[in-house]
Image 1 (cartoon, one colour):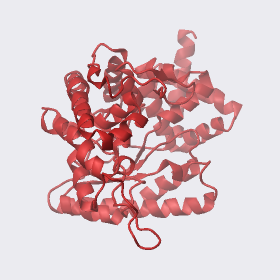
Image 2 (cartoon, rainbow, N blue to C red):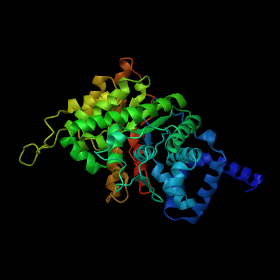
Image 3 (spheres, helix red, strand yellow):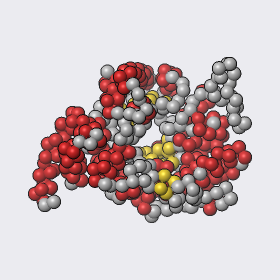
Image 4 (cartoon, one colour):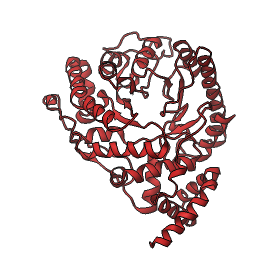
Length: 436
């Protein structure tokens, strides 16, 4: 491409931006995913202009933070688009060019109609890879640890590698965050695996789950070793290198619904608390993706489902308090949580914490939703109700001098994943319900 050609592309792309944010962008994405060749050519031109920096000034995130906004993790959608459009595969997408990665993620969020932007990446895979775990990189899916080749076992876990700031993944994370900070205008959020989830990645769930009951002291020591050798020095590095960084630890594998409430309280929480309480950057650490908030359900005969041997009677309040210790600045209810959103709103007001509410990806998945008409109506009403609860909490906090949170993640209403199978009509119902 000549200089004049690049300038022409840049000019045409910039002129198209207002149309994209007004709705054409989402239609363009959907048409491309449906196989429209004209849409493919238009997107190809658009991404070419994006790579030149033509749209950088339009990617800044400056929404009215007094309003309720929708955010989402969309890197799987971006990967699918670029893979089909240019042949770019997962390893090149996630590790090849951090600036392209940030620009393309922000652009697609704008095209979807989102005003409050965020950025995610394959957090568990990156955490394992930086330690030397053998990885699997599919062409058009997020990477993961090779389950057949665990890095460590329960016999050699003391050989846990140390965080290496010179590792390519460490550099990619730093560079990605700095680009996000510059382009979006918001404080960047580093996504790192929490201690338990990182242990599950490098040992394998099949090894770690039985050890919870058979060797809990070994698990505790392992998690403390991960804190000392990996996560503390990694967070130290990011706090030095990236101004105003937030440190979000993801811990789906350590959730109450996955390892049981008792194991969650006795094993997963403590190492996170260490990171929060023992470090100068600890007030910027949080875990917001713990799933499971109620004791085991009743059976049809009214008896409680038999608990695992290590479990006992755990109350909603106990689980909520533990989640709050790991996420001190806001309260989150995810789709997999069982307690109604209203109960979370009451707790948020009581604890003087902003409320964020998740909307599960499966509710927007074209392969899971068989009755789109009913799903549209239900999503709209649910979103409108949840938006009202978020506003209720915000109004109550304002009366006691606690303003709405301006934290950069996860946002008021968080669509937990957006990918190539997301039904955009259903996403629009979420956006419409949020605005109503």
